[in-house]
Image 1 (cartoon, rainbow, N blue to C red):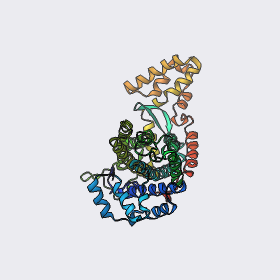
Image 2: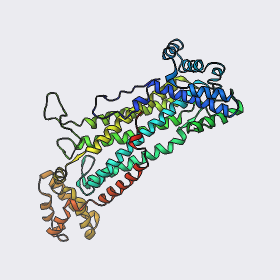
Image 3: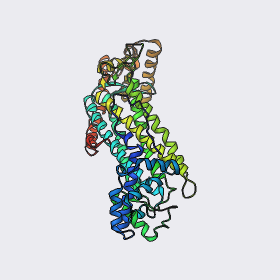
Image 4: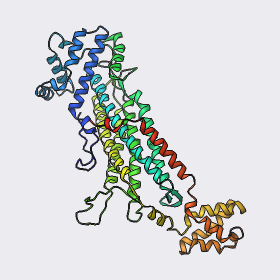
Length: 461
């Protein structure tokens, strides 16, 4: 099953990371041929087929050597996923060795193992993209570690934070996705050679050693039970991509929101010449964020399909294979699109500390109610202090009166805190907790993790 996966417009100024090329049918065919070569070499090692046959098969297992018209005609005539490719490989290998092609294997043994070769390449690209994002986030977290802004819960001002702390949250989540991808790899990248029903009937006791040898030649593990009905490891991968996409979508939505005119605290890169609207010249739209949010939703939409594809009937069912293959290709391509744009945002995000400070002061000090309450509470108890500060805060909000004036006019409070103490407590820049330290520590972890991920030069196809 081919998936071109144009999930986002290819005319975007953000470069395609290379995942579409991986999932072109020709690349998948070559991966299947690579598995056929590994199968032949593994069987030759164990004396199942002649060494000369294995060498001939490996040499000829190159799509570029084959007659594409014959292959296409074969697919049109048979409607089979692999057989015409096997026929063509056998033909160009020729006698006496061509008859050993695809010995003892079934189609899904080859296609699933080959598609995992493609997926391993996709993982390298995705991990490399995350590494670039982490590096950009590290710099952003450090630059904004001490930059005060309003912390918001339930859409309302809560307590002050810093923008660097917000970035630290993103870093922390991305680092766990890197762990998940790496931890899943040994379960995911495994060779399958169980034959028609996964029973090793065609190869007998030599089946497991052949499968293990294929895995070794491809850099894979080997399935303990090579059943074609097993799909949990494939679904796990898509679920992890779904988690990664949830993080990406959250970050995109956060920047989208903070970029709104009413917030104005950040802005994604808007290079000169960018047009936001055909009719409203002033528009500076969050195009990259919208792309991130859309691609992230596309990835997450594949998760239910992957779980559905685990419900294979009996020992094999092409229906669920088709579902899983399509979900994997679309999830990987959309993940690459999302990460490419997220990296662009992180590298060029403009932050506006002045606007953050204006927004921080919108409540006239109300965002510091907790600090006043705790200070007062140390003298009269937390609940009594909460009641006093609550009265002032609600009056300030409902009546539009200055919060500080209401505080200094309340004798219950001024018996313990004078005007100078109240003014000090209403300074939001003095109440950002450990935000700066967490931001800098996250930046260090991000750089350390990025150093261990595939370099950008290795990405693409």
